[in-house]
Each structure stands twice: as C-alpha cells, then as structure tokens.
Length: 81
Image 1 (tube, helix red, strand yellow):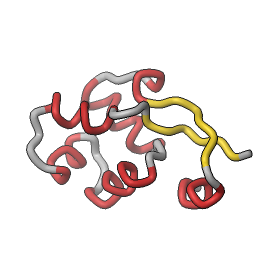
Image 2 (tube, one colour):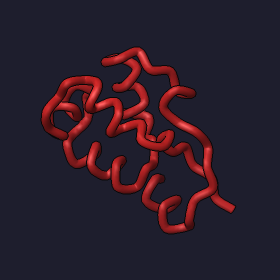
Image 3 (cartoon, rainbow, N blue to C red):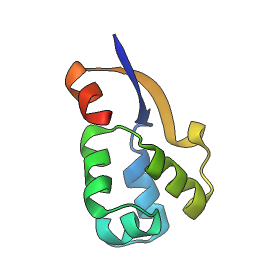
Image 4 (spheres, rainbow, N blue to C red):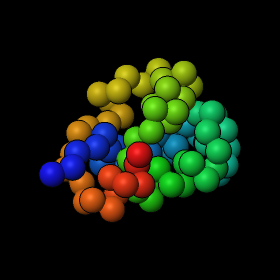
C-alpha cells in the first residue's frame, strides 16, 4: 500500500473560485508556484510542500483544511516523490 497527502475533494477548485482569481496562472502566482506545478497538482491530486506552504501564506489554510492522507496507486506515488 502507498499513501500520500492528497487534496480534500474539490478543495483546489473551491479555493480558486473563492480567491476571485480568473486564471490558473494568476492563482498559481498567488500561492507562489508555477502554473505547471499547479496544473500537475490538480491532475494528480497530490499535495506538495510548496503548494501547502503557499496556500497557508496566501490564504491562511492549515494542512488539515487542505489535505488528507489517502491510499494511492503506485503510479501516482512515483510522480509525487
């Protein structure tokens, strides 16, 4: 079994909507990551330390509000490392 820190269901989309940012690029910039890192996080649903810290710095989210530990497929575990 592999486990990873994943986003709570719907969190990223909800957060971006609430932020008022119109584009992925603007939202990624607000949380201090590249647009490609943000899109990868949306695609894989894996929380990276950079995104977690960025969400805290930009909006004050604590880790438990953002993420949960879930069992994942081996393929996703390899991409999250």
